Image (cartoon, rainbow, N blue to C red; front, side, top):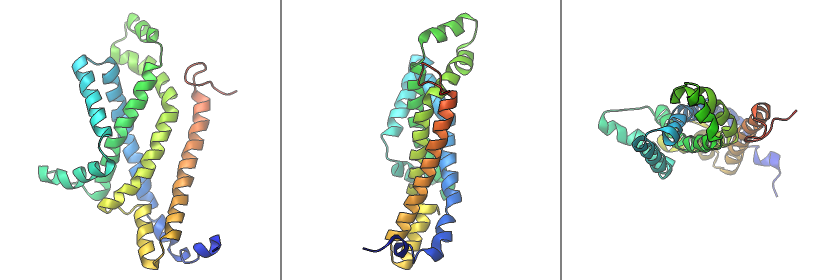
Length: 228
């Protein structure tokens, strides 16, 4: 059985090549997640507090997006939009695609967090003269986001791993670079093991940092308790 050092022996000269795709991986991850974090709460707000037609429309948008594979979304954005006169470079198209997929799941996460907050808080905010938007921003959203942290972090790690799908439209992220290296050295095992290790380190780091944040900001008795 080959040792770990022998498995990575041929890979050593090409580690820099694989790591050169890391900036694009991070751009895809944070860009896609950021789009979701901007649009997702809006969909959640409309689903919970919007007029019935808008609530149904927001729910339908969420359902449709969650029902379409990310690869299909990515091909629609990159290859389909040019037929409508909108051309995006591969990196931008991939960010937008991951963002579209992420916003649907983040909307669901945040909607669940909103619904976990006692309705009396919403009613009290309105009774104090706040508009629905003010009540959401000042009373509901701060609590909902705290409760949603574990789910949002899970979605962040999903978005991170989904960046590998950008390989299909030619984005040079770490998975794409590892495949290129594999084709050069005629060995798929070591490059893919190495890139898998990178994904693990990134997801583990994100989860660990989020756990620390959640313990600091969690609301006692509501979505978890803060640790002393």
